[in-house]
Length: 361
Ligand SMILES: C[S@@+](CC[C@H](N)C(=O)[O-])C[C@H]1O[C@@H](n2cnc3c(N)ncnc32)[C@H](O)[C@@H]1O
Image (cartoon, rainbow, N blue to C red; front, side, top):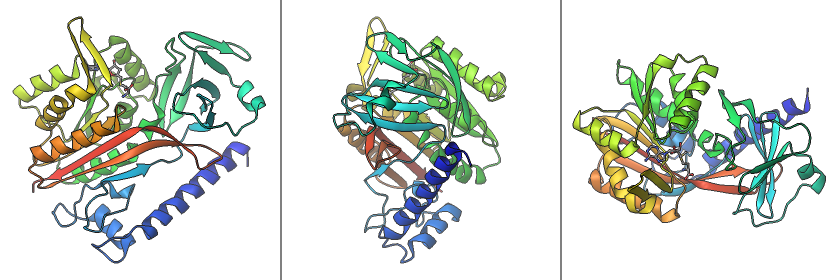
C-alpha cells in the first residue's frame, strides 16, 4: 500500500469513527436511539414530524427540543485536498499533486511542521501578485476534489480556482437532491449563484435527473467553469450558463415565476456589479435572502447559503428566512465550516453554512 493509500485509509477510518461518535454522543429527545432516528430521517417520507430534508446525514445532533442545531461545526477530510499545516500567517495546502504555501490571516498560531516541509512547497505566494517556485515553475494543473475534476491555476491574486470548504457540504446537497427527487418525476432544478469555477455545478450536473443553472457575473469565471464541465465530460449544453448579476437574475426569474428545488448561493463579502452599483453582504443580505426564497419551489426545497463575512451575517440570514416562512414548515441550521489539519486536531475557520429545508406538503 502506498503512503497516499494508507493516508486515505486513515482519513476514512477517522471519518467513520468521528461519525459514529457524533451519532452516539448527541442527545435526541425525538428518539431514544439516535442512530434509528438518523436512519428514519434519511429514509422517511415528506411529513412534518420527521423533517425529511434535514441535513442530519452529516450532522446528526438535535437539540433537546428536537430541532436542528442552531449552530454546530462542520469539518471533514476532503478527497483530493489536504491542509498540511498552518501558522504564523500562512497555510500549507496540498491540492492533488501540488503543495501550495499561501497567506492566511487567521492562522495566528504556531506551525507544527518543520521548516523543511514548508520550504519544499511547489509554489509560494508573495502578495500582491507574485508566485515563487522551489523547482520548475507551472501555472495550472488538474485535481479531483470529491470526485469532481477541476483545473486549478495560480492566479495573480493568490486564488487557485477553488475554495476547498465548499467541498465539505457537497454530500448534503446530494442528500437533499435524493430526497427531493423522490417526490417528483421532473428533473430537479438546481440554481448555483456566485458559482465561480463550478465545483458545485459539476458535482450536481453529475447527479441523476438534475438540471443546473450556473450564474456568475464574471465571464472569465464562466469560461473556467465550462472548462471544468468539459473535464468531467459534462456536455456544455446540459448546464445553463448565465453571465449576469445574481440579484438581477433572481429578480427576473421571480417575475417569470421560474422556480428551483435547490439553491446554492455563495455571495462574496463585497461585489462591484458596475461602476455605480456595489454592495457589501452585510447591507445586501435581506434582499439576497428575499430574492433567493422567491425563486425556491414553495412546495419543497433546500437552500445552501455560505457566508464568509461576519458571523452575525449568518444570524441575519437565518432570522430573515424564518420571518419569510412565519417559522413554520422550515428548518434552518447554521454550521461553521472549517478545514481539518492533516496531523493535528486543529481547524482552520472557513466561514459558515446556513442550510434551509422546507416542505409544505
Ligand atoms: C466564490 S464567490 C466569493 C467567495 C467567497 N464567498 C468570498 O467572499 O471571497 C466569488 C464569485 O462571485 C462572483 N460574483 C461577484 N459578484 C457577483 C454578482 N453580483 N453576481 C454574480 N456573481 C458575482 C465572482 O465573479 C466570483 O466568481
